[in-house]
Picture 1 (cartoon, rainbow, N blue to C red):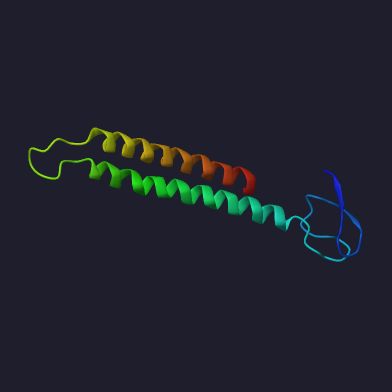
Picture 2: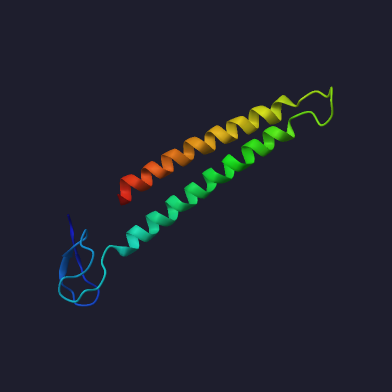
Length: 100
């Protein structure tokens, strides 16, 4: 636990402390906000893939009776959905691990 100087009063404070014990200035809030924003963007990207995947699968279905399904759309859509689901689970685990 390295010590950092408080920007207001100059007191040495642990970088894990939520605030300076002398003046009350928040110490660790910026790190939490930055990691939270990054994790939220990862979750958003994962949800996007989980939405686009099934839509792409449906685009590969035959549009009329007797038509040939486009397997590339179906495979890509399935992989996009599974990749998004995996990314979502990993992102939620990381959020839990870092922020409790």
